[in-house]
Length: 428
Image (cartoon, rainbow, N blue to C red; front, side, top):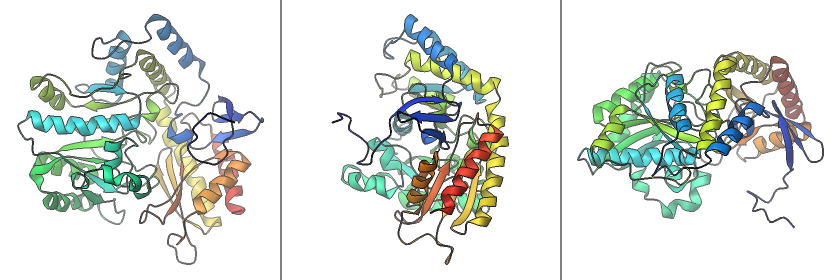
């Protein structure tokens, strides 16, 4: 009997090693990691230089509590990250995971307004569908019914007004104008922030608005005095072909940007938020402290991992690689769509791509979910890992596969990935 509390009752293979885009289990089966786990392993598996950087840091300074110390490695990492993201005046609040990053952003938005004498601002406007994390505040901000349903009694539902998801049929600025109606209904003076994923991840695979959307969102937020939070936990750090996905089409810089997954690329737990100088200074000139924290926030070994990962991303130009290999993968998926009528749409940016599945007879989502899980299951049997999902249409209907291999994937490995997926689609 195992003493592990598994995530579900399914049978889990035991992973024993990984290298590049591949993982092996204890039975010798090899898997091409077509989703980088959960779009985490951005630089690929088995990079010894990251492990060596972590070991060197652990031998020198493994832990220092953030309420008592900073560290050289955290200071260096924050400066390097701000430069990479082209956010020279922004401050890094480092935590251990994306849920913690978005939880922190929500609390920071609330405290920012309190420090400005606007204690009545507490609501966070989010979109449906969306996913911002598993902790209670981040989950309340999410518009993902299946994951929220059990915990709704623990949430103050009125604090989380919901805006419709981006509509690709609308010009970006017109699409963004729908935020204004939600603000008016919620009461503008009660709203602290608007949060969105610039390119949607797990809840509606690789959905993105048209150009001009984020710029108009930023304008509306400024007009009503609310903060704009961009959740880049999945889409950021080069995955979409730019340091930040929010800046792919628009010249806009949100007030708070949350990051995770690709920061340490799976080598250590690391996530965080970047806060503008205005947000940081308002808090520090007010009460003098962010009234929030986690024990492992700013962990030196995680920061060392993040610094080493950033070295690789910059040295190997993995942001540019995401654009090139992403276009190759997108082209191949479009060819698969022509062969498989249950693929209704393929879309995405860089190496964050979605395959939208449904009923070929109607061109709509299947009435009964499960198609994505069946295809993902067959793909796994063939040696390809994907990220299936459901519920994007109404919380139940809407099957999709999210694809996001490591940014270090080669052209030949992209072709292997496409061939395996095509075989899975043929037999499902």
